[in-house]
Each structure stands twice: as C-alpha cells, then as structure tokens.
Length: 626
Image (cartoon, rainbow, N blue to C red; front, side, top):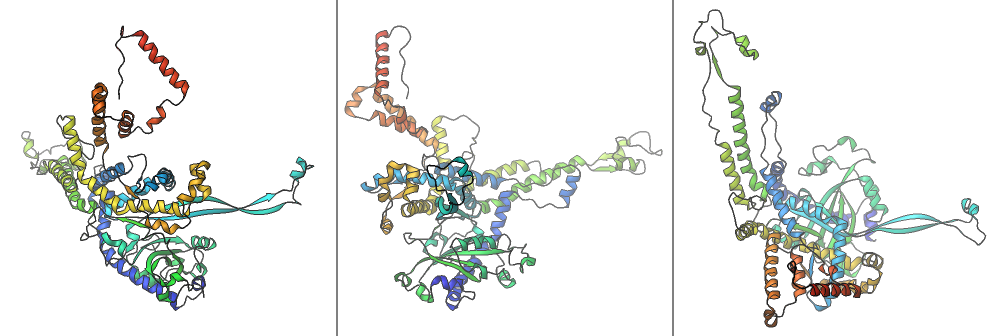
C-alpha cells in the first residue's frame, strides 16, 4: 500500500497512528513548557497595548467628565523605537540582502541573484513581515517566520473557432457548431511565500535551549482553518482524506487547555460540533526528522531508510492529512526563529516588554495618584456647622450658600471653611521622569535613539559620538537577530529560486536576453547547491555614521584635486570615490549622469572652449562641488 493510500483510508491504520502519537507526544511536551511563558506574554501584550481595567472609580470619574486612570505607554514607545532602529538598519541599502560571493564563479550570478531576490522581497511584502517579526521579539522575545516555495496555477476554458478564408463577421457571431473547448493553465504566481507565526502557536524541541532549536528533532506550528479550505487543498492534491475529518471533540479540546487558536479558545462553539459542513479545524504542521521505515511506511524507496526532514500535517490531533519530504536541498527547518540575544540560559519570557512592564506600572501609578490627588483637592473638603448653614444649598451645588436665621451676623467663616491638606504627590511627575530615565538606561533605548536630544549645545563631533554610543547596544542586538534568522531566510529565498524558478518566470523578471544564464542559475543537479558557501551580510552602520564617512572621503577628494602632486604619489580613482560618496549619502547609480553619446561630448567641449575664451575677467570662475 502506498503512502497516499494509507492517508486516504477512513480508518487510518496502526502505522500512521504510531507516527501520529509520536508527534503529538513531542508536541505536548513542548506545549507544556512553552505555555509557562504565556502568562508573562499576556502581561507584555497588555503593557504594549496599554490595556486598562475599568473599575468603579473610573466609572464615577467618567460620569463627572473627569479623567480616568491611565497606563503610560512607555513599553509601546520603547518597543517601537527598537523595531524602527532595526528595520532602518536592515533596509537602508539598495538591496535588502547584500550577497557576498566567495568564489570568482559566483560573481557572474550576483547581479542576477540580487534582482531576483528584490522581486521576492516585493512579492511577499517582506518589510511588513519583518515588522511583525520584530514586534514579536520586542514583546515576547520570540519571533517566528516560515518560508516556503509556492506555485499557483489556474485552469480555464477557451474556445477555438475553425476559421476559413470565407468566414464572415456574421459567422463568428453564430459560431458554435465547429467550436471545441480547450482547457489551458496559466501560472498566476511562482515564488516564495513568507508567513509570520504567532509565538503562541509555535513549538520546538524544548529539550534544547532556544539558541539550539535547529538541532532539535522537530519544529511545528498550528493554525485554524475552515473545513472548506481543507477540501480545496485536497482538490489541489496537497492533502488527502479530508472527508473523514471530524470536528474537534471535547476530549481533544480539554487536553489543549493552553491553545490560543481562534475558534478553539473560550469561544469554542459546541453547537457546531454536529455540523459536518461548517466547523473549524486545527491543522498542526510538523517538520520532523525521522525515517519512514521505522513506522512501516513509505514506498520501499532508497530514502525510506534515510533520516530526513518530513512535513506532516495533522487535523484536530486525530488524523494525518499529508506526509511529504522537505525539499532535500535544505539542511534545516524552514522556520526563521530569533530572540533578542542567543542566550542558552535565558527564559522565553525575558523580553523587552516584560522587562519594562513592572517599571511602567510604577510610572502609571505615579501619574494616576497625582491625578487622583488633584481631583480630590479640586473637589475640596469643607467643614460646615449645620446649626448655622443651610446644608441643602451646599449639597445642591448652588453658587449661593445661605445662613440660617440663628447664625450670628459676623464671623461666618468659622462655620464654613475648607480643610487644609498637604499634597504628598507634588513630586510624582518628577519621580516618574526618573523612573523613565532608569528604563532607558536598562534597555538601551534612550532619548538619542528616539530622536530626542538633551538640552545644551553640541558640536558635530559630539553629536556623532553620542549617537554612536546610543546605538551601540541596539546595533549588537540587530546584528545578532540577523545572524540568528534573517541570514537563514535569505539563503532559503535564494535556494528556492535556484531550485524551482522556471525559464519563463526567469525571463519575465530579467528579460529574454538573460535566458542563457538560466541553466547556470538553476543547475540540473540541484543537490550541488548544498555546498554553496555564499552568505548574506547586514550593514550595521547608521545613516549618521555613513554621513561622517562620506564627509571624510569628500575632504580627501578635495585635497587630492587641489594638489596634483598627491595624485602622483597616491593615484586614486576620482570617479570611484565620487560614486562611493554619493552612495553613502543615498544617491544610487551615479553612472546614469555620465556622458554616453558623442553629441553630449561635443556639447561639453564647446562649453569648455567658451569658458576659456571668456577668461577670468568679470564674475568669479565657477567652482565645482562634490
């Protein structure tokens, strides 16, 4: 029996059941470990979103049009500044990925690879994927993405009319007898897909620290889909046996107490359990290292006895939908996983947000207690002698408070006066500012990184030194995250292209004149790509530092041009220096401004001759600027 037949059976046999239980046991061990961080993650999420819990005092304040208790969004400001800084570094260059070839033979394909990668970046919306990825790192200290190759083909019918030399327009309108329907296919998409995976829905082999997750025996994620979506997958040949998938049972749901999936949490709808046409399915996707022969599965092929990574999908923890070998040209799982720093002793919950949350609570309390004190003092506490003052006037809020007839005509302030109190919250705003500065010192996301400056004058050199020091810690974290995950993702994107891109798509992107390079870019034996040593690098310099380098090169260039003797001692390529200066300042492809035609060269020569004939008399001679 083939693997497909095993999967499509109504009652899956012992072979698949053994594999399913093995995977679910590993998943349960990982979930029990990772769910210990869910409580801290929930607090971090509330701190980032500045969630407030309304109480009776807030409702009374709202009725009186007074401010309610607030949460000072310190966490949000810190996390967003961290995300902005990292994204700025990763996307400041012309290409998201700077490919550095390691052999002379690689240079022929570097420009081709960069253009194809740029197309992938745009098609998957990688900027937004990275934004969500970094937000998860800042809030939960865990960001997860998944990269895979996808092809979308659409079938359609077209009518073919048999034309002849005598065919008229009237014949075309009533054509039908000689028509024949043809089924054609068109590829609407061919390329990589990148998905963000919620940290709540990602699981790895927790017997190893997060810094070594790639060495584990499996990695998995789960997501909820409607049953109709699974049936569409089956029509496309991606899964099997969907007609035998049943709604999630109470037993399975109870076992998944920590599940955070939409449709399977507190809102689990038991009324839909008996409706076989309208229910949600939890699909768990495993990437696991295993041998099919250990489970008496496979088709008797050579690879059945070899351990490799398989992609296995399980519906509602009860039925296997598909078993496919992972693209064998990869050397690891397709996930990109990262934390703020690869500390093998750190807990999952040690994120930027969880670090700030207790101190944000203190800042919010200082603000709220100050507001409450001001509200109390504005309302005032008044001592009243009811024997001589009309209490009804005072309680009604009337602008006039009448004295009773028995009240003496003098000294009414003795019967009505405000109680004097000492406001102990006057320094709370200053205390909150001190705590905020402490937060910046702890996280490294300080005022300079936020684009704010301390008061006082600074020279340009001092500003550069301050900004360089302010960004040093975040630059280290940025480079670390790149090395943990984005470098791996770049390799995946490039290998996907070199293994799967068709000649048609290759020429659509690069032009038909590049067709001869397709066979070299996509080798016939794609296993040779396993030994590729090309790597991606991240440019960790900030724009301010680049401006400083550009200024230094400009000063050197001016000195060289002003003194021809230097050119004899140190022959420099003036054109290359100018291009590098402008590149550091963000001007790309300076070569498009160069003279390319003889007519343009003639115009330049004529202009120079006219300037020479005029001479230095009159206005000062124009100077060139770099």
